[in-house]
Amino acid sequence: MANLVAVLDANVLFPASLRDTLLRAAENKLYHAYWTPLILEEMRRNVVSKGKMTESQAQRLVTTLSRVFPDSIVPDTYQQHIATLTNDPKDRHVLAAAIESEANFIVTLNLSDFPRAALLPHHVVAISPDAFLLQLFQDAPATLKTIIRSQAAALRNPPLLLRDVLTILSFHVPQFCREMEVALNEQSDQS
Image 1 (tube, helix red, strand yellow):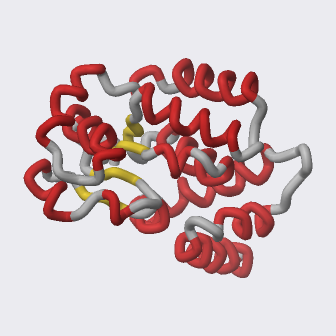
Image 2 (image 1 turned 90 degrees about the vertical axis):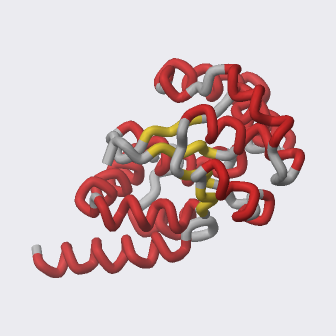
């Protein structure tokens, strides 16, 4: 599964729970995540402007992502593709990063900014985080169950139960959360 490659748009890195799930999946080699300094800067700016983090917390997050995932930063050569692209001008850098990293997917909450006709020549598909996580879950159900359990176990301030994590995630990935809940319930019924 490690041959699956995805550029993560800033909007899927913004929600903490979704970011955590996506990065844990990458850490578990279910796919290779890519982003650019510009994507990280957009995420940093938004978490600060929306009051989710202080400036220093957001900068620490960017530094941590760069340190923990050093191979996820797309080389600056991605910029050479921008001028030829036809998707939304504000998101051309994301498609350019996907082209440069030879990504299969752009994981985004803004699918309308990536029309199929603009992506087709580059063999890239824009996909919602819900559909992306469902695909990963279909390919590696045991790993995704472990990821969600460990994500819940890691939350201590405040502590959250597994169902709380799924409820929070369901704002952005509702179908994935329904499938995960069914799978976890089936597993606990068999125990």
